[in-house]
Image 1 (tube, rainbow, N blue to C red):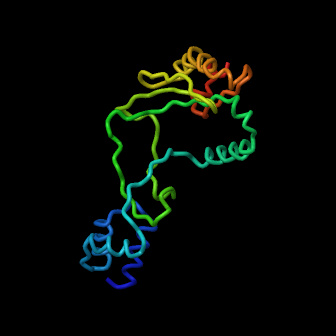
Image 2: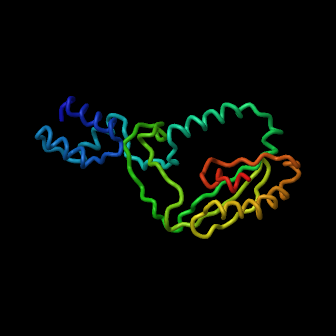
Image 3: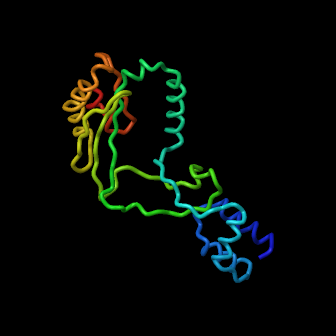
Length: 196
C-alpha cells in the first residue's frame, strides 16, 4: 500500500471514527481496485497513531442545552462553599438489569476519547432496567426511591411531596431552613403541576 492510499485510509477514519477495518478494506478494494485486508488497514492505522477502542458513552445533549449548561456553570463556578451547602441536587437514573448496551469500537488517537466523534450518545429510560430517584447535598445523601414503570409528572410530584422533605431533614444540619432545590429541565420537572 502506497502513502497516498494510506492517507486515504486515515482520512476515512478522521471522517468516520466508527468505521470498521473490514469496511475500509472493502471500500479501498472497490474504489482503487486493490486487494487489501482488514489486518493491513489496522496496521496502517496503528502506525498513524490510531487504536481500536470502545467508544465512550455520554448523554445526548443538544446544542441549546449545552449552551444553557455552560451559562449555568459560569454563573455558579465562583459561588462560596456555604451556597453549595444549602443546595439539594436530585435526578433519576436508569440502571440496566442486563448488559443490554453493546460496545462500539472507534479508531482514535490517545487522549481523544471524549471527542464527540469518538463517543456513543446515550438516552435515558430504555428497557430491561430499573429506575430510581435520589438526591444529595454537599455533605450527604437523601433517600433513594425505586420507580415502577415510566415516571410521569404526577409520580414525580408524589416523590417530591413524600421524600424530599424527609431527605432535607436527614441533611438539616448543612441545609438550614431555606435550601435551594436543584433539578434538570426534564419536562416532568418543569410541568405546571410540579411547579405549583
